[in-house]
Amino acid sequence: MKKLFAIALAMIMAFSLAACGEKKEEENKNPLGLVEPGKLTVAISPDFAPMEFVDTSKSGQDQFVGFDPTLAAFLAEDMGLELVIKPMDFGACQAAVQSKSVDMSISGFSATPERKENFQLSQPYDTGNESGQGLLVLAGNGGNFKEPDDFAGLTIGAQTASLQLNLVTEQLANVVDNITIKQFTDLGTAVIALTEGNIDALAVARGNGEAIMSNNDKVALTDFMFNIEDQGNVILMHKDSTALCDAINASMTKAQDAGYYTTWYADARELAGIKSAAEISYDAEGNAITDTEEEKK
Image (tube, rainbow, N blue to C red; front, top):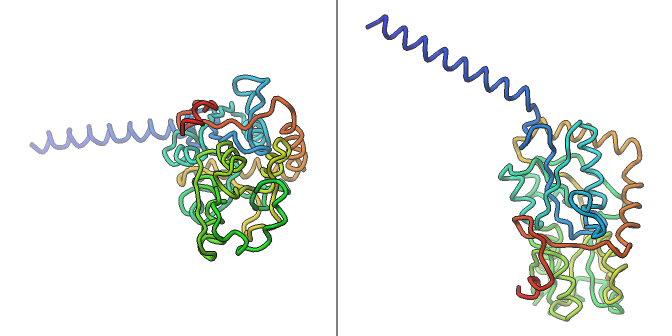
């Protein structure tokens, strides 16, 4: 009996050692824990010019342009990886990171307390014009809004799961009477709602607001701006992605030290003004949403 027990124990230990060896070998082949070894899979919501949008004159991966796709391409090249961009709506980007169906999301994210708790965040990157947060209203009315009380009784739109939604809630709805918040999955629909009078104002990042204004003379930024503490944007990764985050931060430091951010942002703003530039909304599965589908919602 003792002999049989010893044999069984030896077999168990052998299997355990083999399994440990296989796991070690797998980790050596994919030390960053990527969804697909050799590829950097990045989720973006390309309805947020100049940070991420679509050049309709291009196709495939090349159609996704703006500051964030440029940053993603730099990171992938610097790390010796193939870049795979997956377009989806803003909320789905965050869910995809948490479910590990993508390696990260680069989509104009600010470092909110909720994101600090639920994600691994990269070091911040500051484009110089995205840290300001304000509101769009119909053109000609921007100067009428200087203080929170000026929004009393109005309906304010904001993108779901966004920093802007938090700001509207905390700095307007929680301190001013009779403010109604309306959430939108994508900003394109929200801008239409503003121009058609279905909402009175739309919370946006300053750079995005300026990009929208350059293609739509019906809207303008208000004089009122939100108070914000964290400057710049961050990349979202899964909480377990420590090694990947370290590698990303190392590459981001190279880009920052080389002064690329300012140039990339200037290029993105210029590109956002060309005729083939468009802010295109995608659903959670990565399907582009047409105007007809927008109208059905």
